[in-house]
Amino acid sequence: MKKTAILLLLSIIAVNAGAQDMYDAIRYGTNDYKGSARSMGMGNAMTAVGGDIGSITFNPAGSAISNFSQITLSPGFSIASSKAYYSPVAGSGNSYRRTDSYSKMTMPNFGFILNYNTGESGLKAVSFSIVGNQTNNYLKTISAGATNGQTSILGAMAYGAGGYESSALNSDDSYYNGNIPWQSILAYQSGMIATFGSNTNKYIGASEKLFSDNTISIAGPLSQKYGQRVSGNKYDVVFNLGFNINDILYLGANLGVTSIDYTYDNYFKEYAVDPSDFELEFSGGAKTNFYSSRYRYAYDANGTGIYGKIGFILTPFYGLRLGAAIQTPTTIEITEHWSSAADTYYTDSQYDASAQTPRGEYTYRLRTPYRANAGIAYTFGKYGLISADYEICDYSTMKFMEKDSGDNSAFDDVNDNIKDYTRVSQMLRLGAEIRIVPEFALRGGYDMSTSPERSIGTKKKAFSFGLGYDSKGPFFTDIACKHTKYANEYIAPYADYILDNANNVVTYSPEILNKAGLWDVVWTVGLRF
Image 1: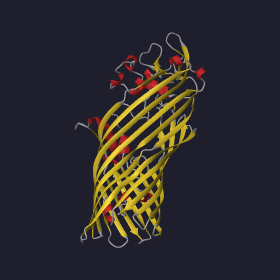
Image 2 (image 1 turned 135 degrees about the horizontal axis):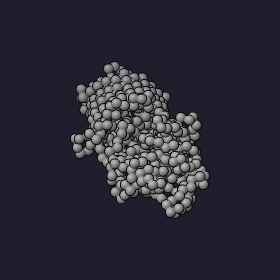
Image 3 (image 1 turned 120 degrees about the horizontal axis):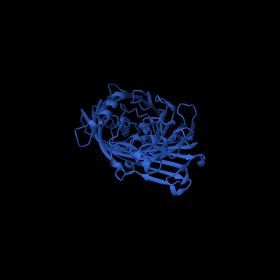
Image 4 (image 1 turned 120 degrees about the vertical axis):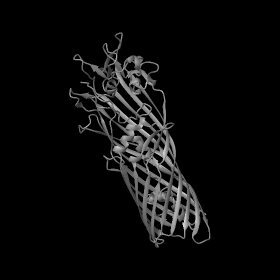
């Protein structure tokens, strides 16, 4: 029996303007570093190593380690993979696995270092660099589905529209009424839901049936399919100055420009296993059978911001290097767009219906966290080195703000959630490099980070390895491969909506367990001069 419930589509970003949440802040505030092939092959444990273009994002003093100028380009290739387990009834123990993958060309790193030797003691060299480093790769894919004989997304949508007059859902300006969810309007205008009997503000899904005792449930088994695809990047382009003081102390400063490009699409489909179970009668007595429905959601975001970073590397005695850096918060101005579309199909195609929302737009500001990192490295002459980094990032300091106003009260609730439910995230990065012969190097690395959310432990773990070649001339090249394993993700395509008189869930809606991974391959080509 359908009872009162709160409609919460966890897998779908909110479709009304100003509906930012804590997870948006985490998404755009998180760094998942890529970099040059040498840096990535060593697990990005480069805070105290320096010398490589990929190290400058971690520690601005890294450019001062080089006693030569260099230019590099690092194209890459990324493959996102997923194993999705679809449970038609969450918690039932029955799930159906599907795998999926999605690949894309990338550019994890590029840049140059210009080094000027003063020929004097004290300040021995000054370096200037411009470096682009990929600080997150939003590549992701999910495909899941199974047969469900208990619930339907159209039933959840029908409940979600309850209380809104059908005339309001069908009016020309309904999308501009801030009190009505766009999804309810779309569901009604696309024929996914309809009023029944003499009701004007109660709804039934096209996949549901009204029984003689006035209860509503789905008319028969449904084949459900869910898909999600994400792409985009987060880049930091830094303008760097480095200073070499007597080959003992190295100082550096970055002016960084962060850019975000994020695209998200998902869909949810339902098919009648046997359309004859789903007979519907339209006004006027015409009859047909529900065949299928499709809901699609598209979202994209773009933003830019500026930050500063300072760092040092100290070599107190031969072989040992100590480094540290601190980065200011970044205020990013983000513009979002979103839209939805829906289709409903019947065995008699003359009753098919479809609708699409307008394309929404909203611009706001997000202050991302400060970051601090420290590192230690030890070099074994020409034979190799080992390194370790530790980084902290306080996500509880994130804050949403209005673009053109000092009145941020509209964000009070979400900013309170950020303070209450996020924390300091910690990152550990380890790396090693071994010189087989002077021209060739083997590299390996490991990095892990804890989740920004208080209720979740480890967010991700990654292993990497790589090879490097240094010619006797100016040419050098490196290649690296990194595999990242992310924490398990749970997705509810639609909310629980079948409850008893005490509002306890009688039948749970589906749940998807997604186990995601990412492979990154980077090839760096460079010249020293």
